[in-house]
Image 1 (tube, rainbow, N blue to C red):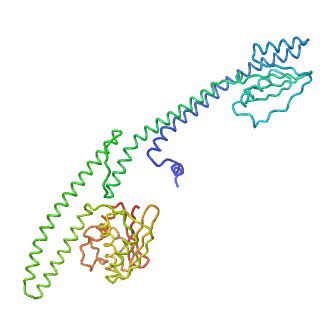
Image 2 (cartoon, rainbow, N blue to C red):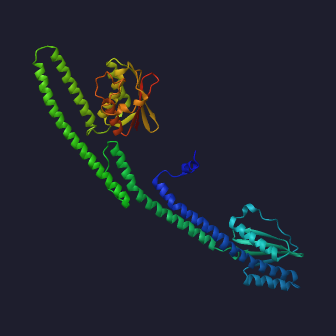
Image 3 (cartoon, rainbow, N blue to C red):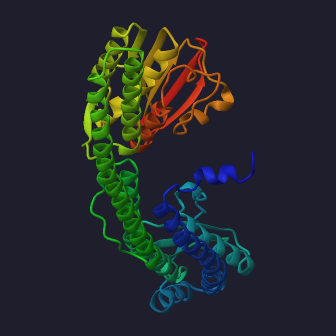
Amino acid sequence: MSEGLPIKKFLPRTLFGRSLMILVTPVLLIQIITSFVFFDRHWSKMTTRLAFAVSGELSVITATIKNGDTIRDIENIIAYSGRYLDLDVRFIPDGRLPDKQESSVVQVWESVVAQKLSAELATQISEPFVIHANFADKMIEVFIQLEDGLVRVSLPQRRLFSSSGYVFLLWMIGASLLLLVVAVVFMRNQVRPIRKLAVAADRFGRGRAAPFFKPEGAKEVRQAGHAFLEMRRRIERQVSQRTEMLAGVSHDLRTPLTRMKLQVEMMEEGLDKADMQQDIADMERMIHGYLDFVRGDGDEEFEAVSLAEFFERLVAKMKHQGVKTDLMVAGGLSLVVRPLAFERAISNLLTNAGKYADHIWVSARKDGEKLQIVIEDNGPGVAEDQYEAVFKPFMRVDSSRNAETGGVGLGLPIAMDIIHAHGGKIWLEASEYGGLKVMVRMPL
């Protein structure tokens, strides 16, 4: 197994998803790199500088209180700190350091701020200290232990924290969301005509009436749409011309055959008369076979068919012809098909099996989003290297099941064309009963 397969497993399967991924992935990578550079270079350095400035102020305040000769000196530095430095300084005689703050209550960014302040304080003061971050009140408290008491300094977080980090993060998220919305709207508009083209092509390929389709979108998509419409017009024109031609050919052929039948009927009884009647009957049968093959489905409308009733009717015909037929069809299954055309296809398969076998097994069941039909028999079968050849028009395989039927080799090709026109598949396998197994898969 190649190394690329695990990656492909997680890739979007739709054009819309892959196009969106192509647009969004580079933007996300750029934003991740930009965020890393911003926080590593700008925000981290800015926070370090602010922590250095505050640590210097706390160092001066601590030294002044520690070396102050009178209570008046301590009161002056406290008042000065509150008025000019935005610091709430308290001196608690005989106070002791509180316990360290639990790290679980410290948020990520504020934890970085507290760590930087702690690192800077450690380089500027020698006394023990503890930092508490009260994020609910947007305050940071610093406790510094002196010999004769405790200094408690409260300062707002803004003294240590640059709000540009939040602004940058909000701007980045907002820009990403805006880009995502624009990309989704743009890609939906680009993918919509492709989806319409795919639906129209799929329905036309199944022989169904394709919905109205107007080419739109990018230049290449419009070109593909116009090419599809032109192809559809050519195919429909060709089918129409062929149908009209065959109608004329059918009329032209039936007229002399009818005249020949009347002439033969007027002949006296004899061996030649019986042979001529048989030849005329064979000619009529071959002409009907040719016309059935080239006529296709015509303009028959699609209808929902109950599979249980459908197969029971066909199996009853086979039993009436003396062929033992076992049927197993799951209940409640239905299929949207052209009823007469689909019946002709399955009937051809059953008739072909009944010519060479005395026992047929028929089953139909749901397999995911498909209907699987299996027709098996206990006849002589077909060589594996001839599985594809038997579906060719007028093909009669020597020393095979077709050798003594007197057919024209169109039963299986007609069935295959009808099944393909419904969006299905047909293939042959060896049956466990010794004969041939015909596999048919139809979209539900």
